[in-house]
Figure 1 (cartoon, rainbow, N blue to C red):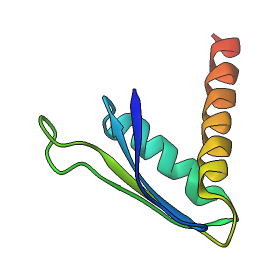
Figure 2 (spheres, rainbow, N blue to C red):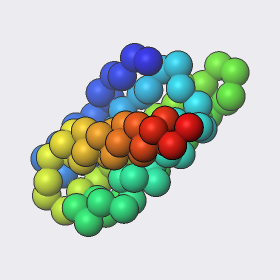
Figure 3 (cartoon, rainbow, N blue to C red):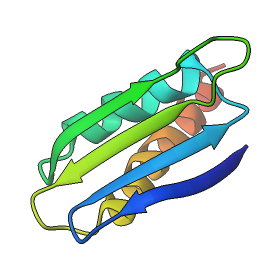
Length: 86
């Protein structure tokens, strides 16, 4: 996975996440939306074969990259819980 910052401000970020599809981006969006500091989290994949997935996050003033980090930590925790149950 390669992450590229397209645009960033104090309360928003637009990222391109190469090598990922709906599976990861939908999961990331899910955990971002659950975060009280996140106002908007949406992603778009222009074309499934040649498009670069892009995600936009807007927060209520919190560093948007921190929100992404927290969401990824929750994804890791959920995966670890699942692995423990197997």
